[in-house]
Image: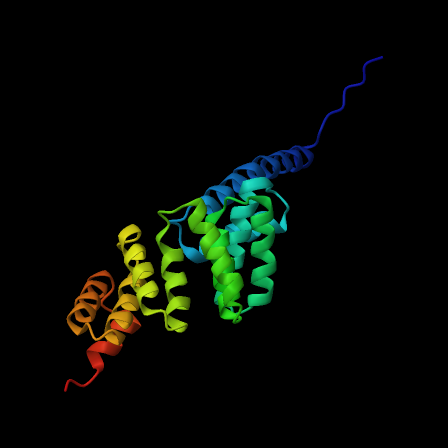
Length: 212
């Protein structure tokens, strides 16, 4: 005998609320994934979206590598370089072609004084994507620190060629040109950097310096 079960109004509302909750879960996951993937998204919003995905274990493969890269960048900004290297190494393991993760891990290594490991990561990133401007800049900084001025200049030239809106390429090339006594070239680089961001600390420091 078929038995009909009727629901009270309160029970109906409870069921509807549960359905709405389930329906809302997937769009939220999709929103987090879209924001986490979006390099142009607000940095804080992107970091939160990636953390949401990682904490809920909702991503795998390349998407997880992207989320880990964003988390690694956050750890670098917090100067937690040991955990940044661990996190970015997981990203590279998941996606060996993730040049962003390689560059960031190189930066974390560099911040801990492990220049050889940093150079290896920068070189690998550039091997995989020769037109990626940022690793050239980062590699140039190590060359500059080692006193290899021409090699540093070459790297900063390539950084500017492939990332013409990357301010540090200009300010770092200006530093090298100053050391090489190419003062006109250095001033030209600071001028270009000022067009990108006139409020940058590097530019403000030059503007505030007394003239001879």
